[in-house]
Length: 158
Image 1 (tube, helix red, strand yellow):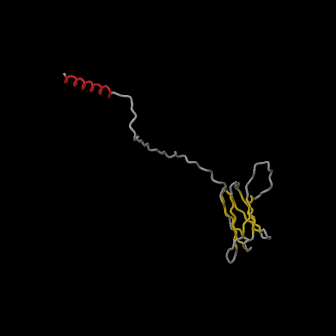
Image 2 (cartoon, helix red, strand yellow):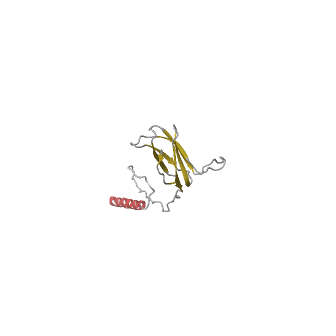
Image 3 (cartoon, helix red, strand yellow):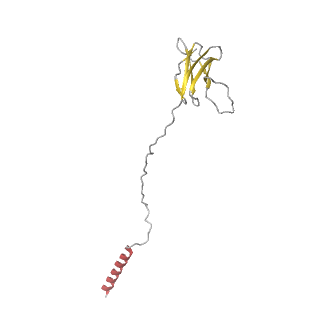
């Protein structure tokens, strides 16, 4: 059984740990990822470095080897060296390797101002007649014209 080189991984990434084996397709392998120097800890203290494990099924490969792959989420992993151990569940074949997890880059925040958006103003004219308003300066002019017309009418009648 062989494990492909994992290389360097940034904490928080998903990493595919894979390899080849002469074990028949359909067999199960247990994959365990632990920090180097992993030891039992006091459960009342804050947690230490992360790790993960799971079971994968051997897949049909090519004429020389079958394949397997395990997806590991490194969220919660502290920077450092990690060991990958792969064991055949139904037999005694094992393999192991190591890889390095580096610290995730700090998140950056944008310092630019948010874009300014404008909303167009739409004015609608009601289909009904306008609401009457208080009379302004037009009323005295209209009254004066009406008075002149009345005076002219009365003068002609005489």
